[in-house]
Image (spheres, rainbow over the protein chains, first blue to last red):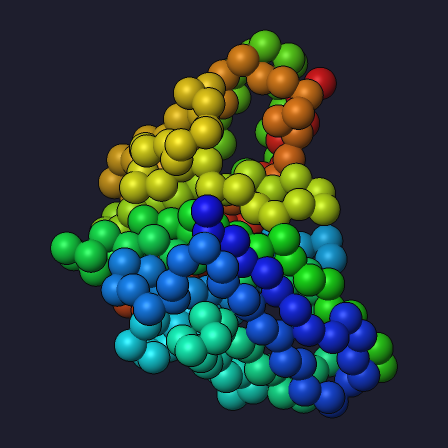
Length: 125
Length: 110
């Protein structure tokens, strides 16, 4: 059974760099049927998609974070990672990693079928 | 403001039925698959519906999904207190090449 687990620091100061890793077990990240996503939920707000990485290494990400964001993958460790520079209090959130399942015939995502439990990140000023 | 529009809240009594709407555009719902997620406090979001109307294994048939044009709907029948949660629709935006979520709907089972 596929499982995802997020890891990283829970507390940061403003202007520091956030680095999170998602470790995938029970399956490989090297498949064209899936992409691997980061999503966050700030306190009192809804889910916000941050970005995704495909087995090819191609990434997609949200415009509002693009200048500060890097998403990468290490297939040898079956992990993918998020790096967000110059964090502020607005980046305080629970961060989730998730697998996105694709219709490989037409190349469209069906949905996010497996999620990690989430990790809380707090940015202090 | 979300690209996908959901009502902020809905409520119904135990045993009743509720529907949650999700309105998008031709570049989002109109040309992509819609999925729905349940998010309970302190837990991971759970996929309820994918491919507009298909349920993953383990999701009860009390949950259903439909799509028409640029809108989608989640239906929940036989409401239980354990269904109280935030519900989100999601899809791909073909014009921006990004994933989008609705703003979320809080379900209260009175």
